Length: 122
Image 1 (tube, rainbow, N blue to C red):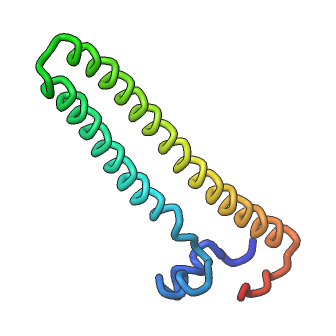
Image 2: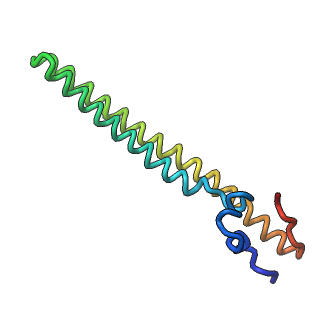
């Protein structure tokens, strides 16, 4: 077997990884983006609840309260759907970058099997 190439990016350090694209940063960054987006969705949920309560107490009548209830339920359903779509969107990006990592590992394995040394990427 040839030398272990899995630690090639580690011997140069994290700045080398940033400059050469040996390791993609999008995987860890997408987790931060996901949590920020989820925070925005939670703020939207609070806005829906606040708007529904505002509608209900504006005139203090039964008709207004009955109008606020569907607004609350519909708004919360939209927020829940938005949360699911946001999760699916972020998972899609994670999967795309994992496919890229897997293809790189397959390429390295094929090169090791053929016994040739991979040319350095620029």
